[in-house]
Image (cartoon, rainbow, N blue to C red):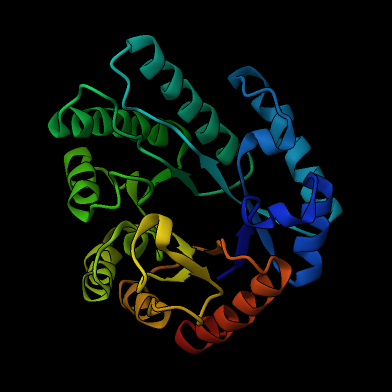
Amino acid sequence: MMISVNTYTMGFAGDLEAKLAKTAEIGFEGIEFQPDNFDVSGEIGSVGADAEKIRAICAKHGLKPCTVACDADFVQPDKNEFDRWVRWGEYCGALSARLGLEVVKYFAGEPKEGLTDEQIVDFMINGSKELAAIGEKYDVAFAEENHGSFTNRPEVQRRIVDAVGSPRVGVCIDSSNYRWYGHSLEKVHRIFREMAPYTLHVHAKDGDGSAGAMGDYKATALGEGEIDIALMLRQLADNNYAGDLVIEYEGPEGEAGVRRSLAYLQGLRDGIFGA
């Protein structure tokens, strides 16, 4: 089980080459990335060349591509915009397949003015159904992250997965976002248990919501906040999770916080999943 980090977390290091060099120096094995981090075409016809470019740059630093982050937004009343995000989903799926990756991490979208909750969920479900078909085509799966102001509601994530009804679409648990949204710790830990059977990808992140949610939420290194990361990992192990663990750190300490997070997660992984 590989422990990786995402390029978002490594923003403190500088440009892409500096991020990757620092990622390797800290001791990570892999990197989760958005395709545009690598200045690729984003066009399906160039996906082979784009994959080789990404693979070569990662290999230069001794890293493996871990996950493609497909930051989509399917909540689009304009069909042209909806279709644009479906094409982006296909590009990310094809790129992942060319890189030999099994899971694409994605956002389902954000609310739009004038839409009801039911309409918002319907757009997310329809977009996710498109991704399921793309997953079948390229033999990859898509993991929807609890992110932002809507999909941190676990009932929404479950509705998406249940409505799609395909093993090609599951969940990416971001361990801290549920608490950031405002759920009680008790509920957050219950969500971990409920979501574990559907989890295809993980963002390991910690924080402290005792001062309040969202803007008042304090991000911390792993093991230094309120989130029971060990409980989450045990639930995943009980459900035979075999994917990667990606550290996402949003605290103020930059490299120091990332290093402590990695050491903490390595200990938990080895103790719960085996070295």
